[in-house]
Image 1 (cartoon, rainbow, N blue to C red):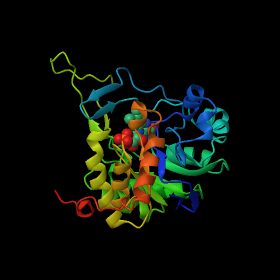
Image 2: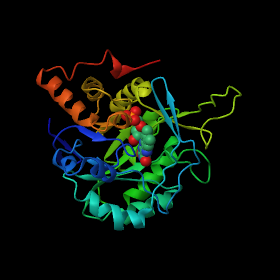
Image 3: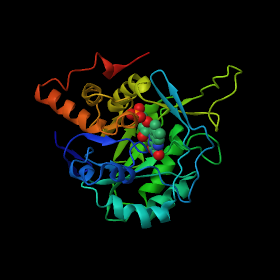
Amino acid sequence: MSVTFCGRQLEHRVVNGSGTFDAIAAERAFGPALRAAFPFSAYVSKTITLRPRDGNAPPRLWETPAGMVNSIGLPNKGVAAYLAEDLPRYAMLPVPLITNVMGGTGEELAEVAAAVGHRPEIFALELNVSCPNVATGLDIGAVPSDLEAVVRRVRAVTAKPLIVKLTPNTADVTLCAQAAEAAGADAVSLINTLRAVPLHPDGRGGRWLGSGQGGLSGPAIRVVALAQVAAVAERVALPIIGMGGVQHGRHAADLLSAGATLVAVGTESFRDPRAAGRITEELKALENAGRARTPPGGQASVCP
Ligand SMILES: Cc1cc2nc3c(=O)[nH]c(=O)nc-3n(C[C@H](O)[C@H](O)[C@H](O)COP(=O)(O)O)c2cc1C
């Protein structure tokens, strides 16, 4: 199961989706047993920004029949407090650390990346580009030329491996992946959540979430993730972290078949914080039985 990713040997192929597993809170809940049998082969931190953010107004969650919509709004303590308070704790984890960063402009994103980009405790950076550009209101990662410019700025300030987390809320994710590759990204990860608007259950047509809209994750988006991972794998040579609705080893195996090198578990960890360990074991069993690389029914050339 071990795999080389961006020059680093990882014990297996399962990591966490940013923002879906708080390793510090989990250690409080599970004690030293968590570190002894850490479920992920690399740990991805929640998105951090230059300045602290409170996050969005409540309500922040909505359960759908096959997933959930969140509008958490990326609350975080800001990069200075992240470095002072969280990094020393993440550095104790038994796996490499990937720090996820975001900014409302290329300049801001590069500033956060520069602040974390020389720290030896950090293996790689993941750029969350599903953030509205303060100038245009469009997601920075949704427009290939904007994305390319942003990744170039970040590339210039750090030698660490750069993983660009692509947004699925764009016309053609493969163009964004190609833009990231052209700008010097070392890997891409996908998919982030799909934009969604749950209505208030009182039936009057008002919006439920405090911020009006959120992002859909979980089993409902698994087939979208398969389609996008397969399409991106056809167009770029970069390693891919595939995610979206992974609940079982079979789902992880399908993303690997579609072209991913690593797979991330996200929403399933909220339902069962021990899910990633189970999924890794299920994936190992499939690999041992020679059944992990079965092509997922022609997913590699998905055309609507
Ligand atoms: C509650 C919640 C918080 C999230 N926070 C972040 C985040 O801080 N940064 C980020 O890049 N992605 C974030 N994501 C997106 C996930 O990392 C992942 O891309 C997405 O949920 C799809 O995977 P899943 O269906 O397995 O959850 C979040 C998702 C959820 C559900």
